[in-house]
Amino acid sequence: MLKLIGVEAFYGKIKALHGVSLEVPHGKLVCILGANGAGKTTILKTVSGILEPETGTIHFDQQRIDGMDPEDIVGLGVGHVPENRHIFPELTVYENLIMGGFLINDKAILEERLESAYHRFPVLQDRSRQLAGTLSGGEQQMLAISRALMLQPKLLLLDEPSLGLSPLLVQEIFDTIEELHRSGVTILLVEQNINQALRIADYGYVLTSGKIFLSGTYEELRREEKVREMYLGEGKYVRRARLWGM
Amino acid sequence: MTETFGGLTQEVVSGIALGCIYALIALGFTLIYKATEVVNFAQGELMMVGAYVNFFFVSALLEVPLLNGVWAFIIALVGAVAFAVLFGAFLDLIINRPLKDEPVFSVIMATISLAIILRAVMAVIAGPMTRIPPSPFGSSVITFGGVAISTLDMFIILSAVVLVMVFYFFFNRTKWGIAMKATSEDPMAAHLVGIPVKKVYRNVWIFSMVVATIGGVLLAPRTLLDTHMGFLGLKAFPAAVLGGFGSIPGAIVGGVIMGVIETVSMGTLSFHFPWVKEINDIIVWIVLIAVLMIRPAGILGHEEVDRV
Picture 1 (cartoon, one colour):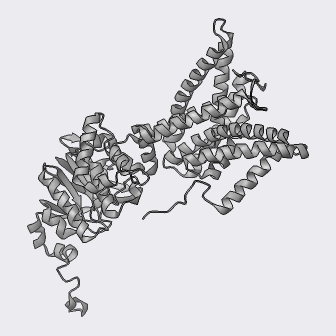
Picture 2: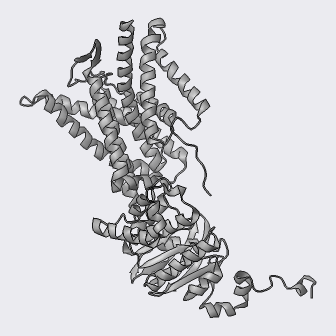
């Protein structure tokens, strides 16, 4: 459904992606792992058109989308929940959701989507007249996800949805992601919470310094010693023997 | 005693009318700043251009024998607004798009250059004479219990109130209005939800040019029409700062306060110091500094808090 081939992207003069190729098959939940600054967010930005790749191609549903305007990519069915949520703080919760449905012209459909957003997270209905900036972190994340779901995207890009949330809320967010996945939405997930992410993911890519370093299923990645050391917190970070020069 | 009171009331009403015009210019200014972060130093010149275009239309239409006066003014206003729509879109194309995300100094220089160019071009087109624009109300006054208020001032206040109501409705009830607010808050998020951000920016410039034109059309019969009337736009800048820069209600409040202070202080001080030409401005700037000392963000502004 989504296919990146040899994508290179820059922030000004700094190269952030060094030829990334990855694939998200229809209906799958694919996860991108990697340390801070590895380029995970950049990959999502190039997919949604915020950042234009310098070289390489991006195809979505057999259509080439690199170089298209973000609003056209959204229109094709790519929803993006950005890092740090990026809700509109000075708009009400209701207005935020309406903006999520900006491209919907049919009022009845808009109402229906609004209903299902309120049904998914009832707290949003309770706070619908409140300014979104006054919500708690978890509520803001629910709003950000609901806003992206207003257009019922075929592919959902999720950038660190659990960032800064309490364990209980993290669980709720992951339950939602799993539920969306089961209902048939294709998901590309960027997550620091690797244990949680790999548990629900069908496939994972490990990114280091803007390159794909490893890829595989949860079981395959678990077997990789480096992944365990770096991300799963299981291995030893430094072998003591090495410290003594042995 | 009642005479002083009557005089003061007249000055206050006249000041509110002038303030409404400042408010309209400050509103256009604030809109552009909020949405695109461009500080448009040509806002006063946009008003001047709008006033002249309307004047050209009125002069031409009053020549048409079958048209009576009122219709000429209405058609001229429609014509001027139509021009403003096209001109606003043109400005978006030549100023906003090429300079988006460029250093703030380039943008400021571009708008200052635009101001100078507009003044010069209009001087070429309109000639050296200061024009006296005809007013649909002539110099008629309405009298309320001994207080005479010019019909034009009443009309200015009424139009400004209607316009502000229309804006309020637009920004809070319509999809495109909310999208403008959303874009000014977070352009990236606006892109991601599918708001056509470029179109929003274009609409902001059109909006701002239309507001400036209406301000100019209302102002011209009060002052005279010359190519330097745009300097009055420089007063919209402190009006916007006074009310709280970047706040739409602040622009309106700041504009009205400035207008009232200016007119009232002109009425009292210029009587005592007739040889000081800028006497009416003194109090305005003193009040501005005083307000900023107490509330640096302006009356209705709130301090920027960087979110992490």
